[in-house]
Each structure stands twice: as C-alpha cells, then as structure tokens.
Image 1 (cartoon, rainbow, N blue to C red):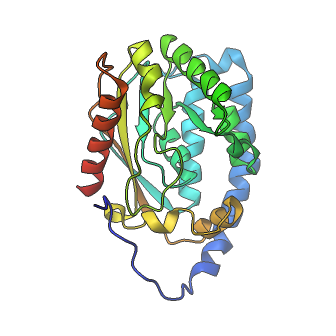
Image 2: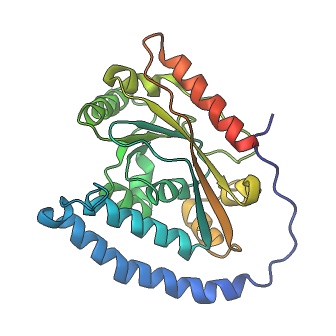
Length: 265
C-alpha cells in the first residue's frame, strides 16, 4: 500500500520562468554570501565550539540556519512535528531526494551515511563533506565495515548519525524495504533509533514531483526543483525505538511501521 498519494498530472507551468528570475539570484547570494560566513564559523575552533543558550554549538547552529535558508531558496516552508532527540541517536528517515539531507539539517545537525557518489555532486557533495557525512561505496563489504565502525564510534562519543535504510531514493509511491544491518551500530552502542518521516507538499502530495524522475541526474533534478511552485516540507520526528538486544530486524521494522503510519496520517 502506498504511504503517500500519487502526484496529479499537471499542465504547462507558465510561471516557472518567473520563479527562476528571482530564485537564481537568491541562490547565488546564498552561495556567495551566506556560505563563506558558514565556513568561517566552522573553520574557527574557538568560535565553532562555543555553545548557544540552548546548548548547541555555533558550528551546528549555523549549519542548520544555512540549510533552512537553502530550503527557502527552493520555495519550501518547513514544518516540524515532534522533537529530535539530543545526544547519541540514530535518525532513520525515508528517502525521496537529495533535499532530504538539507531538510533534516535545517532541524538538527547529524552526520549522514550516504553513497560515495554524492561526494562528487556539484555543491551538495562538497557541503555534505563539510557536514560530517560518512560515505559508503556500494557493493564494497570493506567500505561497509568501515562505515559501521565510524557509526559506532560517533554514537559512543554521544554524537548523532542519520541513515536512509531503504538504501536509495524512491519515487514516493511507496516505502522501500529497510535494510536491518544498518541498525547494528545502534545495537552495539546502545543508542535509540528515532524514525523521521519526510513529506513534500500538503499530505505528501509532491513526493513524486520532488523525487528523481526516470533517467534524471542530479543537476537536472536540482534545476527542475528550483523552478517548482512553493510548497510545504514536513519533517516528523516520531517516537524513538530503543536499542534492542533481540535484534536489529525488530528495530528496522518498528521504525518502518512508524514512518508508514506518519506518511499515511
């Protein structure tokens, strides 16, 4: 059963050129002005490690602000439901688009596990590397072992990690199977997994629009989404699933069930 409605067939979008007319300059300002300021904070340890009144480091705070700004450039109004857990936690989300990372980073700083190809994507790949992303080479067991080791270390240090257990982006018609072995670091570190449901458009109505289309590469998707109408982007932080000695499969299934319920609701 599909957790989100299918996208409706659309006619010609005559307003799209006008959106590019003001969003492209906004994007350039965000990259040429906001990005250097963000990097300045990250590169200065005496400033980056200082904490805000809420206990968040300034490095993480400014990364969140930059990501929220990028979402606004693309016309998204972000709505958050629930609260992200502090400290050591594995965030587990459904995967629709490259924008998922920016959407989640706008709410909480977390080190993502992502496919190695992302590191070569223009702009987004470089930004992902600055945001503590752990890269995995698909089909390489040695790479997977190294990823798992880094995840356990981060969780044991009291830091968070984030994963897309489907393993790849989906069209939004349905939620893919969750790979249970990605939950092993949470089991070893005794850290909870918090499911996160990501929805684009009212009620998830734009999932299939924001996702990659057949034979569409990153740059094509980037430019197409930049010209899309303004929409809401929802991020639902759901009830966490505690680390369980009786197996990672139970954690994976519990997270998947809670995301499906949130997407349907």
